[in-house]
Image 1 (cartoon, rainbow, N blue to C red):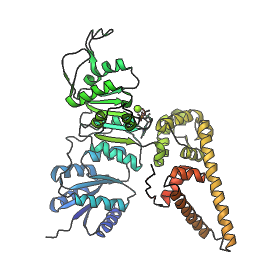
Image 2 (spheres, rainbow, N blue to C red; image 1 turned 90 degrees about the vertical axis):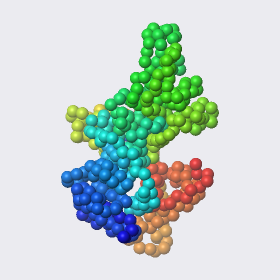
Image 3 (spheres, helix red, strand yellow; image 1 turned 180 degrees about the vertical axis):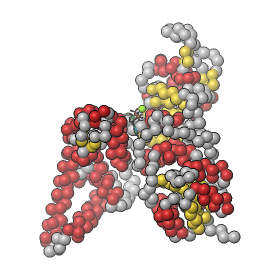
Image 4 (tube, rainbow, N blue to C red; image 1 turned 90 degrees about the horizontal axis):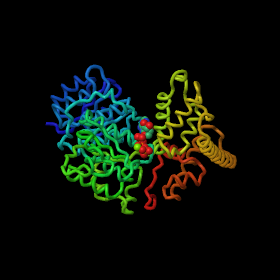
Length: 483
Ligand SMILES: Nc1ncnc2c1ncn2[C@@H]1O[C@H](COP(=O)(O)OP(=O)(O)OP(=O)(O)O)[C@@H](O)[C@H]1O
Ligand SMILES: [Mg+2]
């Protein structure tokens, strides 16, 4: 029998099937194709595929239905779900249902080859646990966690993969990056979504009160405790307890939380009876817990108990791809009445957005848009509708980029004039690019690969620099002191 590993491609588009087949055959796999899920299921029954790539949206059975069926009947077959419309729901749902991975168009074959390699080397290994139910996702209230950047897509995958487990989660990231939103999504996609999702902000409540808020208290246990009161652990029973701003919790209370995580029970303040702590814990903080641990302000053992699944929310400035997407999302959200469908971002405003550094992250963006929609009424959102500090920061950088380009252009013209070269536009553009690339390489080396320093030295915006470096595919060497 032929032992060449077999792969099946399921897509209603002939083109996609052909491209995938060709690309994977090049790597010596036997590749079969199916134009719909029904045909795919028949083939999977008769052939021993180790990997199936399936589109989501097809006539008849969808790719997610196919995934479910495969996980039930032939769980050893790994299924990679692929789609053009990457929405958070699909990514999370596919991973939750046990997809091996999730890829979105445009496809990058280097990534796909790496994925196939990985799948092949783990052949025969245990299939991931499958959920007992398929969720109806449409009623999800925080449905739209926006993000098409790789960083956000990876977060959606993590949410999906960990949805059926009750492991503790730690979400870190700067203020306004969406930590609470992700915590909500993790609850929603879990098997206990019908149980409570209870939040408590550990920074907003005084130490004395926090303990009784968390664990509840018995009548008369302290002055003012006139009645017995349930704590958040009890209220969240069977659901999720979201400990927000955990970095601000004081040490004695940290010890108590650690104890609950270890023993799975707790006492109300002044209580003698141990109550069962049947909750999933998700903790979040915008503080640097490593630093707090060094300073002995955060318990290391608690950190490890919480940090079973870690999600780092990247700051907005590190995912420029998501910026306009988010801005338009908030436009739709806040534009009401007259302005609905009429209001849009003027290109100058988009440019300012791209060069601003968004310390308040998505919350700041949301507030800027909320205000701009009111000021703009209906029609484009212009720089005059944006806060002054934003426009100033933006225009300085836009000007600086302009100056840099002028300088570069002048140098090149001088060079060309001296060398009597052709002024042909095409050659000229190529030359600019290759000079720019050289310049960036030299500067990156000189600055130990630190893009921030290079941008500063060249007087250009770091987002512009990053975009150009990405576009030119400049490889940044790792430097020891590049931290
Ligand atoms: N990816 C996203 N898509 C759409 N809206 C988002 C996204 N991320 C965050 N938001 C919105 O931005 C605001 C801030 O998000 P959230 O409260 O979850 O941030 P946070 O990290 O908990 O912030 P903080 O540390 O200040 O508590 C919210 O209004 C949220 O709805
Ligand atoms: Mg928060």
